[in-house]
Length: 387
Image 1: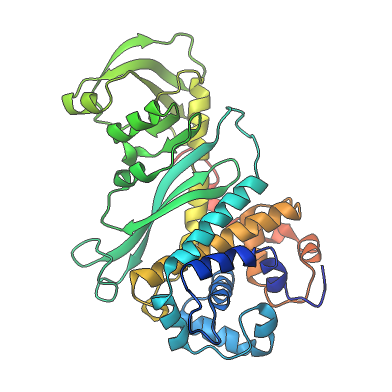
Image 2 (image 1 turned 135 degrees about the vertical axis):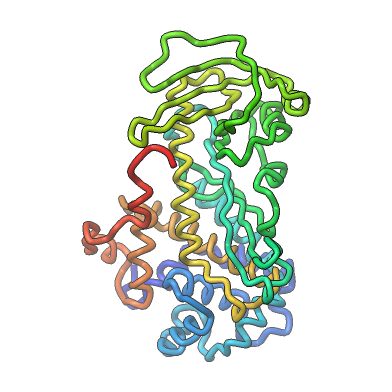
């Protein structure tokens, strides 16, 4: 790697600019634009997110401090006015950035493909994260009477540790309502938390010959007709059931498997519903345990996605910011794989956040860093099996 290049430039060299330009042309993103192009805008947003800038003003000040470097960083040689940046976020078609985010997700998953669970299909977790917004400013993002917010619903690949799909709604939309948008794959596994006890959608997964694991609600009404014997340690029960509530039974008329599991570390019991009759009870519990990876990703996203009015108050501006954050995360995941960095994505992100304007080859940056001094992003969430 050329030592004359800044770390940020080395990082963004892994981006497929030709593919991004295809989306720019498709949606006429650079029409009548002379200086601050869509590419400049994307890199500026990524720089702000990777360096953990708190606001648009904070980012503009940082870029001004590094003005002599901005051309080599790919952000452009001319100073960026805050109003210019905010207007670009508000008027440029968010689909340019969203389509590129989907491209980056697909590319990073293909590069990082592994078979950890050895189940013969992909393993996904589906969950949402809520980004609070001021309702008086972001008037379209309705949540509660006096609160605003958006929800980002993610389908997260648990083997590659990269999102595979996302869908943005206002925070008032219930999580289970978005299950119908998931692109289900035959033979794959989908892990849900308790908020996704939507039997109509779960039956849709069953009909596509896919498998699901969902944490059961306490008020589940069911009837057992078959029990498994000789249960392994911590498995309290493993039974085949049918739903007895008329409405639920209409939505899911087939049999289900109900597993009750005791977590020794937290001294808590958990109940899981699944249609995966071929897996052991401990394999089902392990799938749910690994769902916590998506919580790490949500935590990083919330820390680096600083949506405030100065970035732009329209839904378009918010969607651009969300897409740029996903692109930045996938880019780091790709670099981590390509350079065979034997550290977590979150450790890599932490080191990059303080090194973007250094003139250090990426390989040297990670080889010479004492990772024992770098804390895992979510240390408190790592111990224990379940929340």
